Image (cartoon, rainbow, N blue to C red):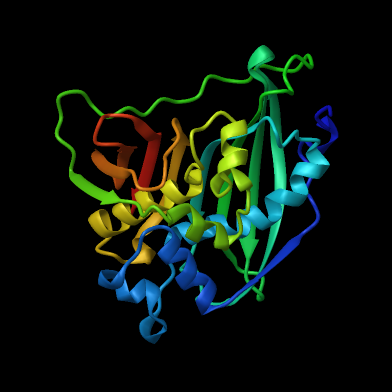
Length: 278
């Protein structure tokens, strides 16, 4: 299946996403929140974790894959960014529009598909944006522009992080997170995972993104969702349910922090990451 280059710079059809408090709570539990974070898992004074913004993204992304001509057997999720404009309501109906600003040709490494998405509430107010980089390993060599080199944000050598958070994911983490919408069998079916080259099902990249986002929220934003303006990262390695995730951040100034999530052994899971707080 060839990439559909006609989608570049065009808006896809709007996609609606309806959710309630239970949806929000299930997501929070899926990315590791527990009873010490009652504001995010108990409806009494419920708040929405900022990284919940990736959940409506998935519902809009799936129709996009068909229009874009992506080969889902060779697709990798490269990067994700959320940009928050206002607190996410605890329930509602969101309308999201996906746009593909560019597709780059990386030759034998595949095609790079850049995606932007705006999500608005029932009144038409912009709540948040998602940006994603998708790699289709089977879609290169179509004669397109190779694209610019990405910016690099590495932790400064010899400098201690401003915060350090360690959390161990549950053996059931992927089984729980998939109920937020990502039903890819790679994360639940041992036979499918082995055929894909893994010894067992792997954790969703956006689940580890959520773990890191929680660490940023509690460490830099005093657990106040209104203080996180944006969060982005590049998925650099796989995570298995039950692994410990270490998230650290280094201040750049003006509310910007370089973020990195790794295992205790040093395997970087989420790199080239930035958080912007106010």
